[in-house]
Image 1 (cartoon, one colour):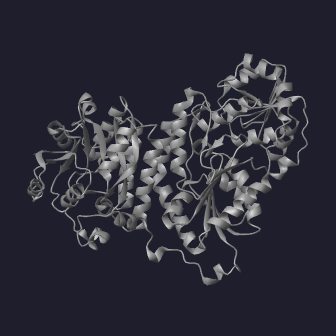
Image 2 (cartoon, helix red, strand yellow):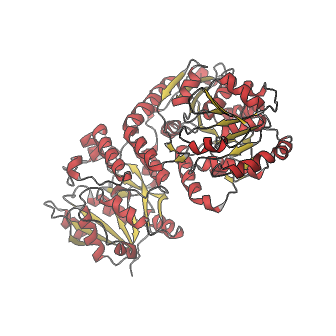
Image 3 (cartoon, rainbow, N blue to C red):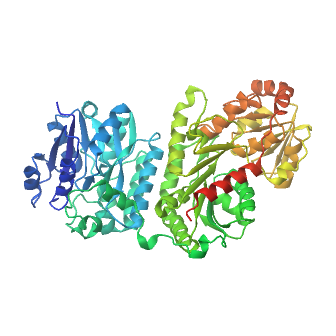
Length: 631
């Protein structure tokens, strides 16, 4: 029995098919067969396929062609490829090995564009990261990635839906993903043509794929007519493959050729003048900050204040981080960011994705374009990212060293302990974290708990960064409990608190009023500090910054993390584990009574908490900058 059947739908592909077939024939892995499902091509596609020893069956639209090919296949595994792809060295061996080692039912691989344009490289790398980011949320992909499936599962779901003339590949992946395991394979990659991008233009194509992806995540189908999408392509020549034209044999793409596709063009390398190496000029840093919540911005403000004494810094930030940092520093530029949608203290994955996809073409063009333009002018030696994705993309694009500093990477770089029931949330979060920050030189993790580090040579952990306003506060246990909420619709919380005689000062409901033992306040930083300083305890979600500041002030915490938000769940788990407070999925009268009764015990445990060492962290960051800076 053949191990893998390679199925390729074609229609007038005489110009592209030989390159794909040669790349298959040049693989070291040989346990395969090639099936061409041809849609009555008018050129020499069939003759070419037969000359390579391929099995030729009747095709049509992609779904029909793939099903006809699968019906003829003898392989245990099915690999569906578009006809304008080229396999990289050892693609088949790597794909089969990773697929079977992971015990998968269906998978896709990643892409490298057949182009030397930086725009194309960035777009395709972004697509790869996006697919990895959502792989645990919703199996998703297309034929241009290379779809690998077990033949028995293909038969179980009755193959591709031939009634669909668009999105049949994603529909297929999703249906098999529901009954088996799906993953984006990490090692094998395919070289992909950019002919559709060149033909239609970035704006048009981005709109079509964004619209189709949004529809898919909303559970809706969309037709090719609605997207003005056609299966056939106009013939084009190899002018769009300038790198391949330089090869004496365009059908053989070596690993060195693949590497060169990722290398920056000589004209785009950021050159620093000679005096930059002489020590007379400060090193230049791009510092980019995630704008979801204020935690990233607050600690970045402390760090940037110190770094600016020694370095030239260009700051990029989104949303609330931009608003916060632009009031403290002059050289802050606004970019777009990705924000999570929350409802009733729960992460809404589908709505988050749909919201992001609607603005993705604009966001990507605007944010990355701004970063790229200013980076060329500023000529940075290094990039520092506090969980900001465009900085990571820029680092890979321009080959500028990257340092990651955040609290999120404790999820990926440490051996953390958490209840098994949160494994699904952990896998989702891990995918997002890995896709946001790729291949930094150094991970600097900020945390109030200290799990074992997986790779101590590359990763360090430091206590939370605290602003001076917090460190100057003198802790006092007054007569109220501070409540901070991000969900205005949490009416269950209000009903529960009214059952107590204790006084509660509540932030997050955007109002100033009193209601019995409840006092609602609009956010004011000075007032908030005063209320936090005098609180006997804090009730909040699992946000890192408020927990860190509360622990520093020795305030016991009742934590109700946002459902589905693993980072908050992990913060709450360790809070409970260390005896600094309690973690509950919901707030209720009985649990809150127990928490308040045990306040003396939590306060005693907090006497040994020393969660602050700004100077040590700044020194670590400065040492890393000096070590890894480009020049």
